[in-house]
Image (cartoon, each protein chain N blue to C red):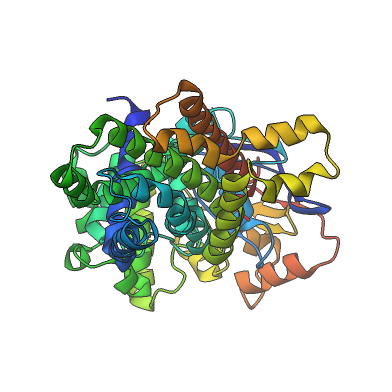
Length: 249
Length: 248
């Protein structure tokens, strides 16, 4: 479970994330939506333990991300934005390295399962620098799911993939969602409709909507443009009040 | 095996193999060995000294390391920040201290390897005469300690910026000031305005004065303590810097 209470991150006078609170339960796939610069990545980074919150708290499976950081991180698989990796490393060595840090050095079977699941067999001996964008993203996903963590944080997991690859990754996410809790940050609305059981829309660091994708549509009166229209109207409305529908806690 | 040792070991090995995966390692070794020999035989006057020792070699090591160690340390953190891989590394179940130590140790092991590869010089003096091998060993240890302090300083410089070139310049300039801290060049700049206690403190911080004893083969506990504390301090400062600036 992820519990977030009044999570805030300030940079000088600017609040990148401003008092965000939500809970996510196992089996949920939460789509974290918002325009660029809304605070999605900052929130994800605070949950992953990369940025320290200015105030507020967040717990992953009961472990505080600041005071019990190593246990919180051990419960997480995290795909950072842009799927960064060490370019000169070969894919296999990279995954072995991550497996080592995760205490899975002896679990070859786990590595093989993940490689097969993301169809990385053909590029195992290639250095990451030479991979296409799609393969790089899959390598990033592979390292995130390698330790079989109960919680997955995926920051724009399908960015830069072609339609076939997007389809595959979404299938994988739906597959993983059976026994995991997944948070996906994205600005691709079709993705939310395709895989998410719940959507939180964040704008200027604050939550402006928290509902199921269907609930968001119904609340807005099923507008002709679908979620696109809902998203635009919520994130462009000045001084919009928080819309909280059936999915909100 | 406990997880601290395991994580440091894994990061150390990853760094070393990354280093040898690029031409950097080979270029570094080649340049280091060429310059070491050049300095020893030409500038150090190895033959004209008429003594079978390595004083000419060790005397030039600080000046060689002044440029080569920052070249080794400049990418340690700045590259991680620039490529974004720092986010991947520090969101694993690894502490910042483990990551800083692992990377530092990898660079240190590499420099130790470079020092080991100067063994033909040692063979040469042993063939030419009967040098004090204990003193030579102590001087090699001094080189390792000097390298550790400069690497730790370089690691801090690299944590301060995303640009490896800026990290190199800051580390080289910082190393130069530290090397010369006991000499008039630095002391005169401070003497005009700082109280005597500060001048004395800066004077006692000079790397070169602490290295000279070791280079002559004198292992003094105070020198060992000095290099260990200086290295530890720079590494702690690296941890603190990364802790507050890693995401920027």
